[in-house]
Length: 283
Image 1 (cartoon, rainbow, N blue to C red):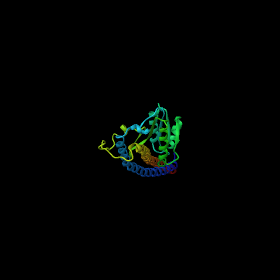
Image 2 (tube, helix red, strand yellow; image 1 turned 180 degrees about the vertical axis):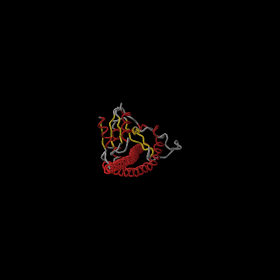
Image 3 (tube, rainbow, N blue to C red; image 1 turned 90 degrees about the horizontal axis):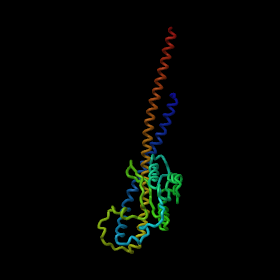
Image 4 (cartoon, rainbow, N blue to C red; image 1 turned 60 degrees about the horizontal axis):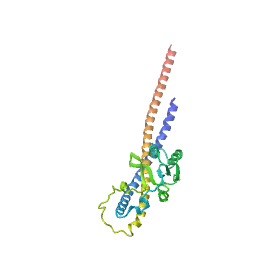
């Protein structure tokens, strides 16, 4: 490798470093925006949980089909991935989690994200609906309507949602949450509910509004999962681009040292040639 080739490599790596640095900054901004949206939605979801919990204390849970399972052997999984790469092991960990979790079950999928669609196709499982071409925030209602209708028709005994849950700017975790049938004991026991046995006057009758509240709750859970996955995606991409930028900086340093060494060798050879030529003339 000569000096010209090394200089060309340094220039190329420098340009790549500028791109990865810009992507890192953009992902950081998007992550904060998605994180804020997820945090702002939490009070509504917690209040909704509290209301549902209080109502279910004074009614028979059998009044709503959303609280009961059925005899179907199939499960429907809403898989949330990403449309783009360059986010490290974000999707790889999710797909690995899916293989470990669902390998022995009969599952169909609703897919959100192109990479998830590729994964399920290669897996050979049935894709009931693919919303990869749409913006995630615009398809919440469509996903909700399809999932709930299939459950109420008895085609699936369980509806679950699988995604990467955002924990912090440097941490996310693949999780699966059961949407239907709604499991009050496991989901709502930790809700900030005080005086659960207090009596309330509810109009119209609790039995008439419970389905509406439960559907609202499910839709909100889907929306929250999409926002959490999006925040995790931007976090993973930010870290991946930061690592790429750091690696580019180290590579530039190494190439610069190589260039300097080649220059020194060239200068040394030229000096030796000059000395040799001078000695030849003198002799």
